[in-house]
Image 1 (cartoon, one colour):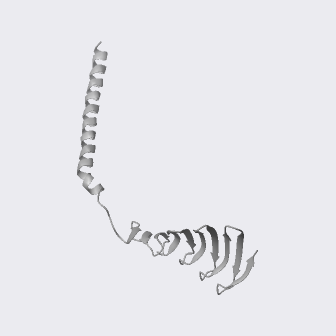
Image 2: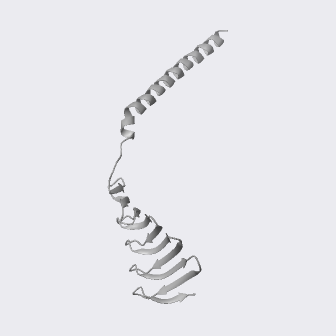
Image 3: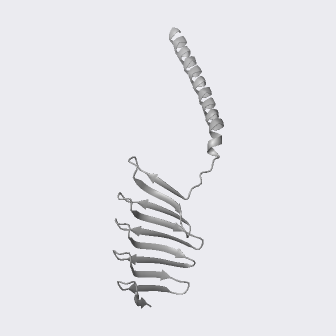
Length: 151
């Protein structure tokens, strides 16, 4: 009987502790909501945001470009590696080499979907597009001039 009484006493003590912890948690949550509500409703307005790593090196930028929002993921040297662009009638993604030169891009412009490949200087060398009618493949010289088109 004494063991049962000890066990019952421990359970009641645990129950009181849990009730106190729960009440504290509820008050803490209410305080956060009450005091933090004014901060949560604030608006941050900027033309450009830069996300940096622990050493202060830029890793991601979000900006308002001339065609629309631009999200860029940067390499260790701070140059763009992946760039996403969204505009009113277009959306695209560019993949850049370690020097930040666009080497491959995928885009949807109007109703035309396409993919493009550039050389180390960033000059278009090959492109494929799917128009409303037919697919088209174009080959370009080192100056970016069309030299052959299929079909």
